[in-house]
Image (tube, rainbow, N blue to C red; front, top):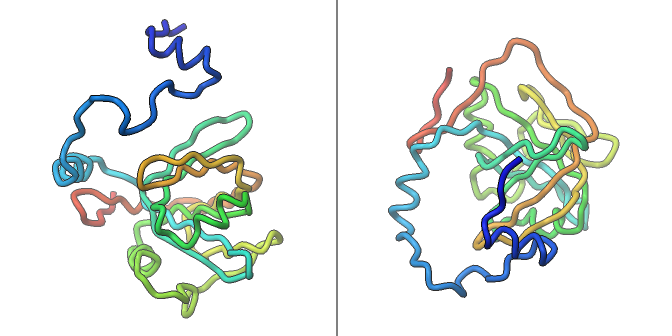
Amino acid sequence: MVALQSGDQEMYRSGGQSPRRAGEDETPSVQERAFKEAMCKLASGVSVLTTVDEHGCKIGLTMTALISVSLNPPLLLACIDNRSRAIPALVARKCFNIHILGAEQEKIALHFAGSDVDKFRDIDHEINAHGCPKVAGSSAILECVGDGVIPAGDHTIVIGRVFNTVVEEQTRPLIYHQREFHRI
């Protein structure tokens, strides 16, 4: 059992809401450039999130901020830039798919990181039973339904409940480190 610090106890008593909002305390923040430089030292797996908007338009984006949260129920979280066209669909708790990319999918990662509006043109994919695009060839696909969103600075934390997985055998991961792709 982990002992709660006094600030943690206050947050626990308040129902999980921090008594201070970001930017309201006197704690200084590190400069953006220094923060980016430090964070690029963290090697991360590369994933693509796909969903559809309210008009049925397919949306996809490359991301490295993906974390398993819970096994029971199976939950994950993804951190998405607030400027993303995916945010309204994810806030509406629609379905989305997470594609964990393999070592040979660098072109897919770069394609979905681009600004092209029709990101699915020339991309081998199918639509699942819930209307979300599934990109072919991924090491793993986690089909999710939105379970919550949390605003966090210039990003939104999206929590997804995984309702189906598709896993390929014998694949190596695509890794992003020091602003470059790597293979293990």
